[in-house]
View 1 (tube, rainbow, N blue to C red):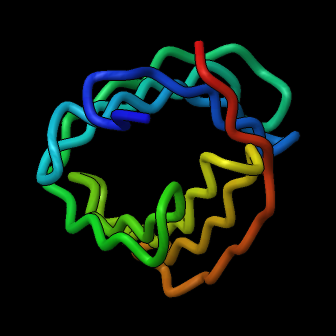
View 2: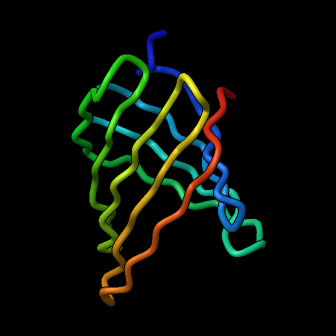
Length: 101
């Protein structure tokens, strides 16, 4: 499966986003829901993508609002693990689903 160029829905329950890996160094995300409310937040970020095994990747990036993100994206099993740190220092981790759009 070729991951770059495809879109995936990451659903964490409290938030939903479309992730599009533009390349191995660029990701565009669109947050569609946050805390149960519809939103439309878009950003393209530089990422570091590390293949852990076939169809399992770790992606890391920093958003313009200062959030730092690490995700383990398991495309074979449709699972995403996310950890992010807010500019306030608050640390959040979630497990969600990851499905092609």
